[in-house]
Image (tube, rainbow, N blue to C red):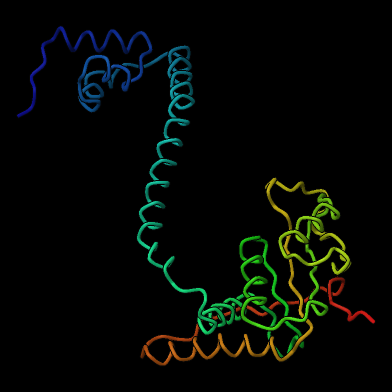
Length: 255
């Protein structure tokens, strides 16, 4: 049933409207539905001064409410992320000592992020995430007999970034000597465009002069993808991009 309001209550709502109150304010103060208030005061024409007051109040309310809404949304996202993290915790129990499993993960990662044979004739993988780079280089060292003399790294970076700082950073992450960092120049397309992410350390490119290992990792990834593709009648192989090598970063073997 709809509530019946007295003429006195309706008049009070109209008086507030004449004073330049918004319908939302009147509804909140009098605890009356906004659509009901709107029907009572719809014929009242506000002055420019009253309209300006309402506009100011809306702006002030938004300024107060926006940070609260952002904080509430962040808490909601964190709860959502925590639920997912907990649901995959059992993967922590996978034995990393199993070399076949380690090589499988390396192969899939390389298929997605690495340069493919025959476009490239050496192992080449780049990423901006230090965790990905650290995992990949450590996995290579763990599961394969790596010749450290054949390892290099390069850096793709923005115009306003400090190259020496980046070289020191990625040398610590990869545990490859700074002397084995390939010379590179900043991306000219970023000139005059400040780097917004303060934690962005450019793109690290792991290079290993060994075609056999490159093709082995690529083949592992392709084998797994093809097997899973055959299992589903409607599934197709996942597309993986090829890595283009910038001329200024193309590795040159040391004498």
